[in-house]
Image 1 (cartoon, rainbow, N blue to C red):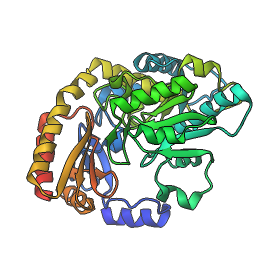
Image 2 (image 1 turned 180 degrees about the horizontal axis):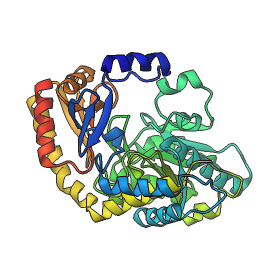
Image 3 (image 1 turned 90 degrees about the vertical axis):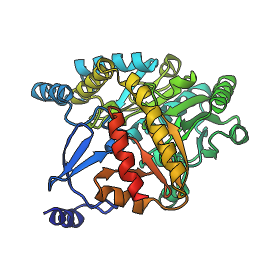
Image 4 (image 1 turned 45 degrees about the horizontal axis):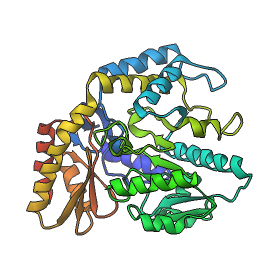
Length: 393
C-alpha cells in the first residue's frame, strides 16, 4: 500500500523533493505513524514546526471552533483572532508592529521591502544594499533566495533582486568590509539552521548592533527556525539582549497552520511600509490568528520555555557522550533544542538507518545531523533517540 502511494505521488507531484520513502498518516505526542501503522519517534517536528507535539487537544479544539465560525475574510476587514494574536506576539517579542504572512520566506520578503523603503524615504535612492551571511538560508522565493548565502541554491535563478553583499557569520571584520554609504540593512539568522547550526556569538551580535546604530542601518534577525522557544527563549536574540529593528518568525508560530510574520520597532513602522506598499490575501486570516493565539497561550500555560531550559542540557549531554563514543562524529553544536552533530562525512545513510529503526531525523548540509524535536520532549524520549542513533553509527 505504501509503495503504491509513493509511486502515485511521483507521477503527480513536481519532483522538487527527494522524499524519504514513507507515507505518514497521523501523530500523537512526539510520535508519528505511517499508513501501515509503524511508529516513529520524531526529532524533526516538521522542521521545527510542531513545537507542542501532535494531537494537542486544546490546540485542535481551538482550530475547530474557528473553522466553524469563519476561516477567511481578507485584509480589507478586521478580525478578532488576528488582533489578539498581534497583541500577544508583540508582548512576547518586545517588538511594536506586526505583519502576518503565510510563510517564513514571505516574512523575509516583507522584511527586505521594509528595509529598502526605510532607506528610500531617507534619500529617495533605490540603489541601497543589504549585507547577508554566507552559509545562510532564508527561503526559496526570489528575494529570500537572493539573501541566501549558498550559491548552489541561487545560480540557476540569477539574477536575484541585486545589491546584496555577503559577509561571514561571526566575523565582524568581514561585515565591515561590506559596509558603505549604500548599506541599508544587515540580515542574518540568530542561529543559522540549514547552514550548519551556527549560533551567533555575543560579541558579533553586539558589534553589528553598534554598527547599525552608528550608521542608521537596520538590523534584521531571521528567527524563523530558531525562534518560538527553541533556544530556551521565545526569540533567540533575547538571550543576547540585542534587539533587532526587524525580525522574522514562522514555523512554530502556528504549529502546523501555515503562518509567519515580520515584526519591527515603532521607528521602522513609522518610516517604511504604508498602505499600498505590501499585502497578502491569506496572511493573518482568522484561522491563522486562532492558531497563533492558542499556541502562545499554551506556551505560557504549559511553561514551554522553562521546559526547554530544563531538558535541553540533557540533550546536549547525551549528544556529547555519543560524539565521544563514535569517531565518525567530530563535534556537537547548537542552542537549546536546536542541535547538530557534525560528522566527518555524509550523514544520509545514518538518517536512513534511523528511519528504518523508527527514528525521524534530518540533516543540515551533507555532514550534519540536525535535532529539532517537539519542545515537549522528555529525558526518556532523548534516551530512546540516543539508543537508536547509537546503533546506527
